[in-house]
Length: 250
Length: 222
Image (cartoon, rainbow over all chains, first blue to last red; front, side, top):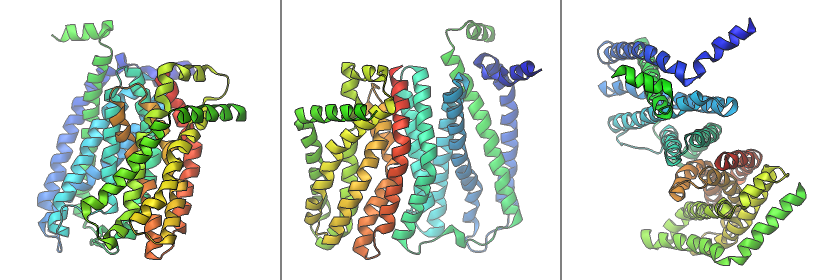
């Protein structure tokens, strides 16, 4: 009994069995992502009321806030799979971590960019050295460091493990960096514009944001599955099953 | 174990002493970078006094980072590192010895040099003292975190730039509280909280960083 459970538990930890599974799942997550994002944008742009203080400019938060959530969440997921890959020595976990990094960096960048676009009409400036902005910027640097390290190492197994150590060091450091920057900005800036002063959110606004967050989540899964399929093909190109797979497709 | 630590420490210090030029170069780099700032922003004393903590700390970060290349790379090239991995002593202890030697050679000179440069920036006496203390607590953290990055990028092409990319974001908390302690003294609010936090970082880095460096070295040497 336990044997069959173990079998099913680790069945999809092999790249060969995961590759077709990822191929089957990916279109579903893509469809979900498109539907949820369309619904979220519709709520955000047409249903949600205009904000009394910020006017229509606030509507960018329907993209900004979910992107910021995903950027932090994806780093944790990346750290988790890196840790699993390092401890259990499973190749697929490290491949997933590798595939997560560009999506995470993308969301970090979107969060910074939309934050700047929101800051200009609301705060009157593109950039302030606010705690959240600064720590988001450092998060982007951490993502870039992870990708640069993996790209610089030729041996894929070493790249996996080195990246995993870096991701774990980053996971330990993220709270430290966040609180350092937070205390720093309160020490240096005095009373600057804070997002806490925003009025309590209308239900439709919250709904739109949550739907968008779910849409981004589904997009992340779809993008990571697609990317991990490419990584698997590239890493396993010397194996028979990849040759059969590619030969069968053409 | 203590003997292994002492052995690595003595060996690295002896090697550094035989190649004094490298040590001096990092120190001169620190002095030059700091001296460039008044030329860039103008010689007005009040402005320089405000900038001094940040400038000195950023220059210390960069000087520390530049010397990271000496930490493992020469031993990697001549095969000593392999012997260290094969040795019966725990690798964490050997890494610790190397990090301590690195700090004595590249961190401590910065601490001793900093008050002199602080004078150039017209820092008052108590701020100079705090600057020294903050560097004394903070630079070991830089060496410890840097050891992880140096081990990760061992033998990788373009490792010099890569180390900067990996290590500088992780140095942010040390920079904030190191420079913050000097700024707080100058502002009259007292530096105690900043220094305590720096001490906390040192304690955390002492526990985790040698272990992570040892793991990274094993990955690099596989």
